[in-house]
Image (tube, rainbow, N blue to C red; front, side, top):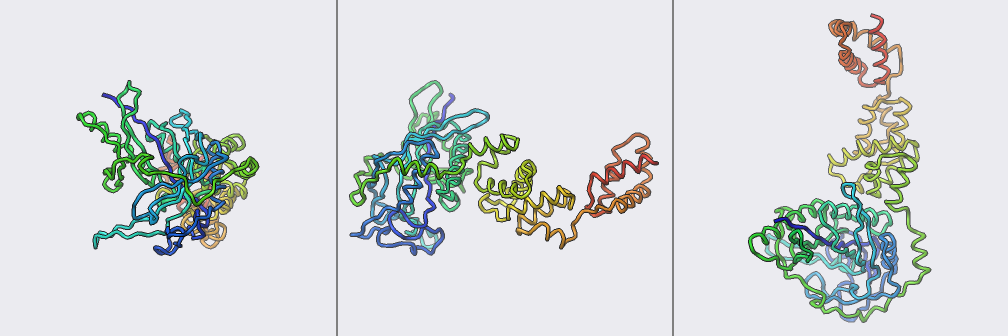
Length: 477
């Protein structure tokens, strides 16, 4: 029996505001436990929340960028549950009137385009963090994250493969970074996803019973979790069992998920309107002001790069998928005005080094203008391409200034035609067998001679000039 998989996502995005959603505590990541906490975000009795206006603005920005309608009149609600990471035993969220609704994000997988519908985007506060200590079998609570502003972006169940899920998350992450509402550092929990999955036999229309895997914070883990949970549900059904609606925890180390609790519905949380916060009224003027402040978004930038620079669509897809790669491209381009060369260096050496060193794009530290300078040094034949790659590796690792590094290490290309001819003549004289083979019609031996010449010239000569000198010298024999 064949099965279809259907998925929906709830993406949690921590906003890059300096202070929390309802108090003035810092949102900075990595502080000592329980140092970014006050009476408001720790839920002390008698305290009153005050809404951070920047959170509303960021929500509007996100809604516009994801083609949502903005709810002009919206408000907050209390979501009640008892758990150690929420000291006041309820979360301030939005159930009845979320700030954004009915949007979409367009993706493309294997040449097929698809619009993923966004049901809603709502504002809420984050919970704290539980720290499990296996040595003394205890659990500690860090409340620093309590009250950090979140957007929850809820999709419709439009996904049919893990490739579609990753394409959507990649596009959504790029949008959030472009518009400056979040750094989306998944390793720090700034962007994480709950994945709802169900399977059903091919030919049926009724969706199967879904399970939810909570708070997965890497694309690789999300892809693995989808594959494992899909197979688990199919195996269960084929063995005559039934899928139970429940919340599951994904263990990426073990590569499997575990049941946490039966899946709650909205009524289980006993929602009611938040009595301590007044409703929010959003004017057309405010929406228009936010709309005008938005930067060029990934799709628009992709179309412009292809139109203005003639770059391959595949390369542009990769570069525009990250705000940080775009920054490198545009700052380097401003220096050298060589779009195809900049693109080639990003797609080749930069992505290779990032992969080999497991460096996230946002953690690339070298000055992008130096890439433009390096390309000009190569164009002006100050160095050859092999030397340029060597210099780029030092730039990537240590942010060296290319021209200074080249001079200090005497890496300039040998442009003395007389010196090149002298080396070529010496190499030819030292390789009579290769010369005889060349005369007999085996022109491939010139590669061997080329290698010997470049070795003698310590890799500092222009390969094209050396090859030309070899060809001329062999013709004269």
